[in-house]
Image (cartoon, rainbow, N blue to C red; front, side, top):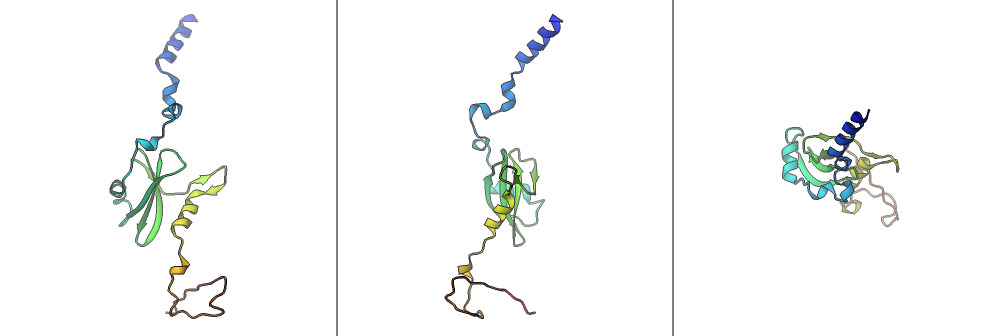
Amino acid sequence: MSKIFFFLTAILLLFPVSYSFAFQTKGQECSKCHTLKKEEALALLKDLIQNPKILDIKTVPVKSIWEVVLESNGKKGIVYIYFSKKHLFSGTIIGIQGKKNLTQDRLVELNKVNVSQIPLKDALVIGDRSARHTVIVFDDPD
């Protein structure tokens, strides 16, 4: 019995547990060493997505993942690439504690339209032009 105990103790001493926690015990961020440039992201995505244009890259609250904002065929979208640059996923990240759809919140932020920049010179105005709220309706009769 003592030989087995000695053997298990020797194995545990050879493989310290601290290695399994990587940078957590040292307080370092993985994003300090790992980078992803727009050109690299484009090279990774060009065979997967038709005519991608990389608009922005940033880290997300999930460790070891970049959020890559892109535009393809006039539509904006988000894909996530792991720091290893070997895997990506297109989907939704939901914060469990706050019950927030982080991906949807980011897409809404990206696709906001500044209403003040919509030309109203030839618009049909119904009601008071100086009203507090403005409703703009787009219609295509053809």
